Length: 255
Figure: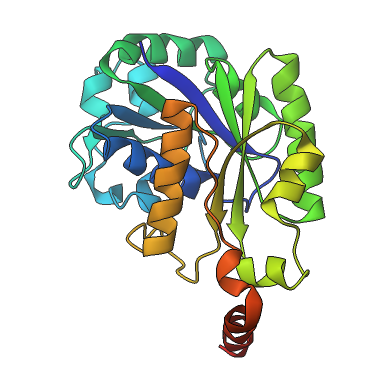
């Protein structure tokens, strides 16, 4: 039976879809069977992030409305054969209920070790639909006070539903943390008061390129923590401390 984990955030822009995609890739590199399920109906972009948009034949709504079997909606990743994506749709003609989501997940959960659900931003009906089948949640937050405040509201909603919460701090700039210009990941963890699962550095890349060494290593640490129950955190800050660190901060600021 798969671990069903919803990946959410307090608001848009925190990077939950990117975290969902890259965490799925990192888990699949461990030969674990992973399904990425896009439940951001209408504003879906997991297929774009995973570069499978042109391969979509059937989607989640087709499965719900019995136009295809769940396996027909799976798109297997070209590089990681144990990783599948179930895309969503641009337009749903009718409202999808939480019960419909549960039925689909029940049909596929025995085929995977992990089902990672990409959740819509906000706390409306889309959020409730996405979290309805999950026993665990990963809340993605950026190290800004507004993001932390929104994440705290999301965590309260998840707790009320009895869902176990882990926190990932995303888009951390080690140079700004070292210079005292950004909250550190550990300050965010302390404010939110929930299990620290991982730290992901900011990337200058605009796309989901996990081949960058730092980000790949950070997601590997994140996947290890999730799968093995460890508490190691990727260090974004140390390279920017000390004499050489100050030089690196200055060079980064000038770029």
